[in-house]
Image (cartoon, rainbow, N blue to C red; front, side, top):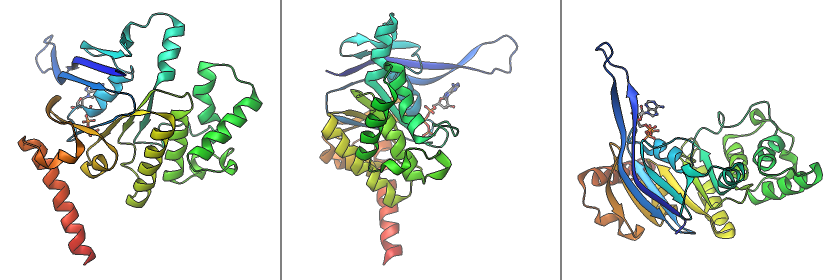
Length: 268
Ligand SMILES: Nc1ncnc2c1ncn2[C@@H]1O[C@H](COP(=O)(O)OP(=O)(O)OP(=O)(O)O)[C@@H](O)[C@H]1O
């Protein structure tokens, strides 16, 4: 098994009106799941249900209050040596929704993609140019983009650059946190197709975080519904999505059907 997330609880301190009284807000409770090689697991939930917090925990950006995350059997929060931590950084990657703020505006496309490569090794400039040109090609961008700055790219192009950066270190899995949500619908499909292609080519696993069930049915093998930080339902086979039982999951599914129906009426 590639990833095992076991009994995660996460709480944050909360401001209290009562002097000296410490309170906390529980964001995740009892969250467990497994992810196998080559799989795409969808995590869906309403705003504030804890999806991004969970995403940050499984790539080691945030520590759980209790619980463990095992990557190939090893607890990612117990990697002590620098070498182990660099390996973990190489194996786990992420693409965020907000592609504009997840890149340095003063970096060129070359600098953005080179950054993780230079953290894990010390490649020379020629090696870097070759590798980055190949990566750009993989995400459907030509070499002419190499020296452009983020403001000289469209949203879809910049998200492709972020995807190239995410796959640069040959990770084992990528957390895609609302990675297509800021793009318009036609670009969303292109990016989903690209992600599916890359998943097959690099044998990647994804954790696909979204509030969009339509995208889940397009790319995911399984799905987990998160409500107030708890897993309320799991669908192990995506084609069985219509058999969901929990009221909350049904509400999310019906919301999609309503929107699709509404769009059809408009297009008629
Ligand atoms: N660093 C933090 N300190 C305090 N509270 C936090 C912190 N990060 C997140 N939260 C709270 O945790 C809860 C879950 O937030 P999270 O961003 O994980 O939800 P989400 O499901 O990803 O929401 P969205 O879909 O709107 O991005 C929210 O109530 C949020 O305010």
